[in-house]
Each structure stands twice: as C-alpha cells, then as structure tokens.
Image 1 (tube, rainbow, N blue to C red):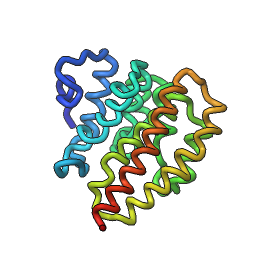
Image 2 (cartoon, rainbow, N blue to C red):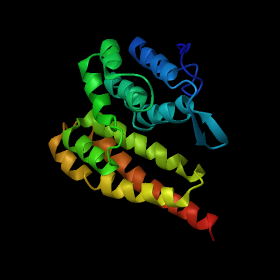
Image 3 (cartoon, rainbow, N blue to C red):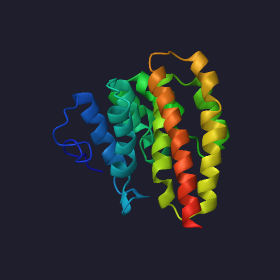
Image 4 (cartoon, helix red, strand yellow):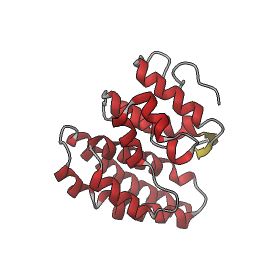
Length: 204
C-alpha cells in the first residue's frame, strides 16, 4: 500500500485543500488501492469513482466546507471495505471522526435495515449527510449494474431505510445543515425516478 501524491485529478488541480483533507485523501486512496467499481465508461478505481464522487457531492453540490464532514466522506468505506481499522482512523484524525466512520460502517452480515436504523437513530448531522451523499452517488451509478433485480432492491431500500427514517432523525440532530440534508433527500427522490425511467427504456 502506497500513499497517493497530491489531490486527485477528479477534484481538480487548482482546488486548494487543507492538510487534514489531503491526509484523508491520501489515506483513502492508499487503502482502496486495487479496488475497482463499475461506472460510466466501464470499470474504474473505486477511490476515483465513488469516494471522490461522494466528496464532490458534498463539496461542490452542497457547498460543504466543514473539514470533519469532508474527511468522514473520504473515509466512509475504509473500515467496511479495506484493512483499515477504527484505531487507524482515530490515530490519524481523532475520536470524533472515528465515531462518524464507525456509524457509517456496516458490520459484516448485518442486515441493511438494521444498519440504517442504527445510523439514523444514533448518528449526528455529519453521519446523516455523508450517508445521503453516499446513497445519491450510488443511485447515479446504479444503472451501469447488470442485475435489474438488485437495482430494484436498492431503489426500494432507498425509500424504506434511507428516506423514511430521515424525518425522525431530523427532529433529533443538530439543525445546522438542514437545508443541505433536505436538498440531498430531494435529489435522491429525483434520481430514483431517473433510474426507473432508464430501466423502463432499457426494457421497453
């Protein structure tokens, strides 16, 4: 595992990031090295296709500049999908980031509904906004997957386990990013309709 150099091209060479965010980029890129994901144009490195995709939704579309949110977004899949541990996260970024990543990490064998219930009942606004950005990016790339039944399952899951518990979570969490959270929820609903239209066209 080798650390990456500089900000990835997908973020843009003229984008200035803090030392902590650069450290999180390097860490995520290193741990996800070798992982691939299907996207527009075929298989691409997971870090480029998904991790930066989620990061850019938050930074560019939501206007998020909060370092802790952006770092959590960059690291949200490291413990679940790589050899990275929560202790690694804490050592590099402290206990708060560790807790956000812990809540975003689905335990092996855990039903998604149980994972989502835990996340929305215990998570902070940071956790919720990263999860919504993660789901939005997944829905934007899901049409490239070949399994239609799997796609339909993810669409249903987006309603039952992501959007439905959101109002209750919003009554509990700090409201400083309410506007961005509701915007992401609206974008998720819009994207679900886009996916359904694409599936209908594909099979018409």
